Length: 320
Image 1: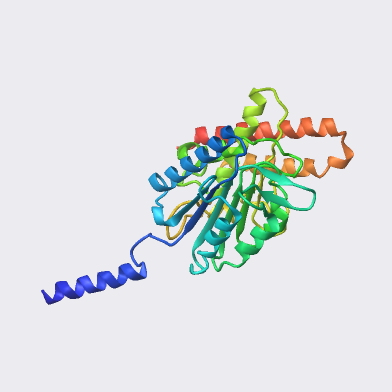
Image 2 (image 1 turned 90 degrees about the vertical axis):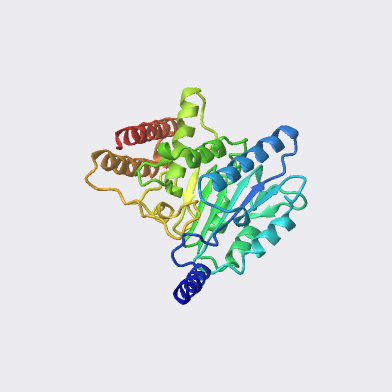
């Protein structure tokens, strides 16, 4: 009996310390911004609800780890500031994720989240996140005119994903649909087959699906997603584990766990080697932008992205 009590006491201490458990204090803030019209309000709330369910049912989060801000209830800038401030007590080794579904604007100086009351500027959000002790941070802006957020928010160990590459891409985006799909359709997005989807894999999946959608529809692509994770303020359309952007995102997961596998890929895999070469070719071609007529440049670049999407499909199909 004495032994049993001592064992139980030890177990309680270990549970309080988090030893032997993958439970963590990671936090996710989901924002469904101001729709302005009923159809958009329903769409943004739908994205938020689907992601919320995915976090709870598939990715191991508890309800207490998730804050949802939505129009008509608590989607104001003031509520967002309070939600971020509440994370100031998290220890440095935890992860903070902020995901925005909604309209975005850019006036040539400031990119903004469209919330109830005053819109929140990119600089304001950067200051809020900079004030948190959490060293691992992820910000995902799935709406229009989101690209400029990268310049203001870029920091080491902060993964930033945007639906567009500039403030001029201001149409309603399809990117959020494909990004959420990446988290729910784990088998399709998990290219390295480690059982989990990293932020790099989720980005790749959403971008490829986007490229294929507009290719099938025979329409020019009005949104070009970017990922930045190296702190240089410049996002990439083709991040990877071998490029300047993508290495940190490959080690960050939207999953409540103590640690995540690195998902390293064998350099001997011919399809993966071909992917690295194609990514290098895309970056080299982008460097020629000023020397090629604009129409030809856009057409050839889109062809390269289509090749990349098809190659990723081959990689997925060939994985055991």
